[in-house]
Each structure stands twice: as C-alpha cells, then as structure tokens.
Image (cartoon, rainbow, N blue to C red):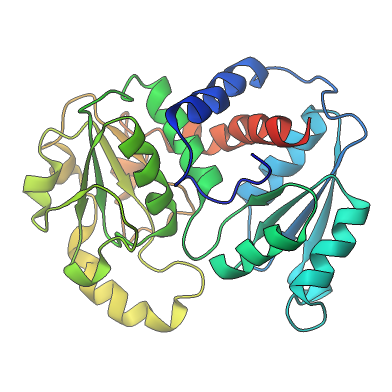
Length: 287
C-alpha cells in the first residue's frame, strides 16, 4: 500500500495489521521514523488532525512541516502536479486535508511519496480507523453488533466507517431523511424513525449537521435534521452499555450536553485514538 486515501479497499488483514500496530506503538516513543519528514497541507481548518499528526511524527522520531492554504493556494498559485512533484523531492510523506476527493486522488497520482487523506468531501479514513479502534477497545467490534448513525448519512467520516464496519460484519443502521442517505456503494439499512433505529444499539454515532464547506446550507440543514439530535431519552432505548461516538468538534445541534459527557460517551478516548492510529499509519507507510 503506497497511499492511504480511502477505507473502501482495505481488507480485514490490512485493517487488523493497522490495529495491531496501533497497540504496539500506542505507548511508545521510539525513533522508528528518524530523519523522516511529513508535509501537512490544510485547505480546511483543523485541531485534532494537525496536532495528532505532528505529535505522532515526533513520537516516531521524525519531523513535520505545516502548510496552510494561504501559503500554497493549491490549484491557483500551485498546480496539484507541481505541488506533488516538488514536495516529493523534499519530504518522505504528505498528509493533506482537501475539499475535493478528486484533488486527493490527483495528488496521490503525481506524488512519489506516500499520501495520506486527512479528510476530503467523500471520506475521512484516519478518523474512521480511530473510531474502529475505539469500538474494538470497548468490545463492540463483533459480527452482528449494531451501530447507528443519526443525521447526515452522507457525512464523510461515517462513510469511511461504513466500509470498515462492513468488513467486520457489523449491523449498520443510518437514521436520516432520504436526501441525506450515504453516497457510497456499501451495505447499510436506513430507518427514519429514531426510536426504532436506536433500539438495542451497541454503538451510536453522531456528527455535526453542517460540515466544512456546507455553511451556505446551514438554515436548510438545521431545519431538516433537527429531529435527529441524540438526547438522553433516545439513549435509554439503546443497550445499557452502548457507547456514543462523535468525531468533534461538537456544535450541540446534533447531541445534548448530558449525553456527550455521560458515562456512555467515549468521545475523548476517540479523539486520543487519532494519535495512536496515525502513528501506525505513518509507520506502515513511511518505515
């Protein structure tokens, strides 16, 4: 595997290798990537992605270089081909957070070093692997376990997670209006009724209703998705030991504060696991 752009084509053995490597590297700070440098380019704002990748490289003995869109202006000041070709001469890997999945594919096509998808409009594979690792650590990664997503089913993070959950035979339920169903070819069931959807859930996943780049649709989205907010009353319909996931940042239109900070919530473990999983991804691609 040269690049990590999507979870779609990962088989069970590859996923297990990443998760097992995560376990091995989680609490270690060893110079496994000594002398290696990762370029980190962001067209979109970031907290968890930029910090977790930067810290991960330092834990592995390497370095990172932060590049903002104001510096690069990809597609305007710099063509994707030139950007990829030049960076490939300077660094050992590129992590990019882009608006377009098509641009991500072009970046990987022209780069001669590994390219990691730090988020685009279609997928967020690094986040979804951290989600899967969190699910595994809470003993929910089992065939037939029920994971329920509320809100915008075409959410890039959950679309990446659907592929992973399919691979492990989980029962995937999406509760959303028809126009917001996932845009990928994968196995899942849509149940519009929230109470029916959440009943006996092992995992509940929520995310913001307005993602980066969708600000112009804010009023429409909040109106159409307002009924899909996760509340304590809905949470009671799930299994008692259900875990609640949210990739953050939280905007509170999608979840109530009492649920986000409840005993069932593992959102801060989930955020921490970005660091651990990305150490494994960096090591496996750049070693």
